[in-house]
Image (cartoon, rainbow, N blue to C red; front, side):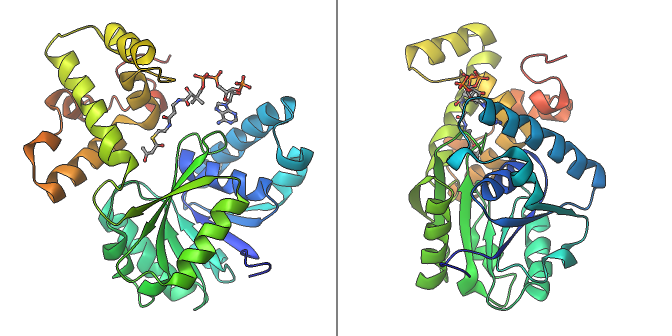
Length: 287
Ligand code: CAA
């Protein structure tokens, strides 16, 4: 790694998080390979990145006045993980399902060079367990970005049981290079941010289910009453209700306490396919 930074950064999964991570890394001068097995997802990601870069450029917010075309030229899309054979740092950002993530880690372990660090953008799943799917648990770490990645200032760093100091320091260096502030969490369910954020969102669904207030009143109350940029139900739609539910299930299953029980209304929205902004309908409609 040049200057202690990856020469080639791989990102696996071109959803809203993976695309955002790839965009920020390329903006900060890194060569990036973005892998998704669906070519259509890569096309959607490219469109989203173009729009985001244009917004940032118009406000003079691209570091060093970076040129959006030059940023995009540093990004190589690929549909096969084999494209990561030369990557020296890989960030996994596939959907929040442990079996899926473990499969990706197993495949990356056999493909990526032995020195490569394998990081997960998981928002709640155990880094120690993902690391155990590989033969390099010392080179596995949690690198948890916030949504929208180009705008949010934080990365949560998570040390697995076997993460080495060298891996952790390389990860801290990368996060700093990407212009983000870090907080460091132990490898515990939901880490710091989602351990605290998701129960608040879940409670907002209980309040909605019990008719304590309308969605609008709950969001207005929390947005203006506690000075948050979005009310909790709007934020849930923005994150994705399926992601919120997965994280609540991780908290409930692993911490045991009934205070983490997912709200039945949240479960029902997900069962209905009302996943939030990305599906056009969540608590609110986006058509
Ligand atoms: N790319 C580039 N710029 C973007 C952008 C993107 N993807 N999204 C928003 N922006 C910019 C806008 O251009 C705008 O810039 P100006 O202030 O210069 O006009 C600015 O961000 C604000 O955007 P908007 O005016 O469109 O709307 P807003 O004021 O509501 O801000 C928001 C949008 C930044 C998303 C803000 O509402 C916010 O911070 N919401 C809370 C987000 C949050 O809590 N994220 C964490 C979720 S939890 C998580 O990610 C962890 C997990 O594991 C689930």
